[in-house]
Image (tube, rainbow, N blue to C red):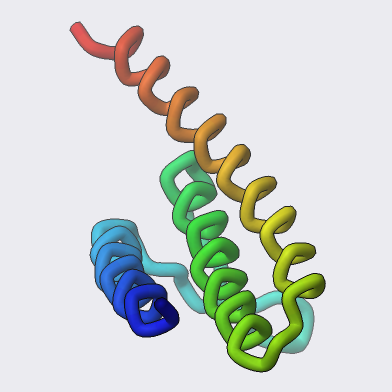
Length: 104
């Protein structure tokens, strides 16, 4: 079962990398006395990808917990994943609605 879970995560990672590569990359800007990376445009697509990164990393953390017998702690991470998935669904539906009205 864990082998299938790991394979699924690898497929999701590949899809995630495709999403990341499709977006403009952050730019290095000066802030105060240092340099930081920031996205030039803060749009809904970047927000979705950032939420997807939370889901990806939390799924991997849940797998590690399961492999080591921490079932209750893994269940706590399921709540984090569910909340991030709700945010993603909200953003995607908003983007789809916007595209529907913005189309000529």
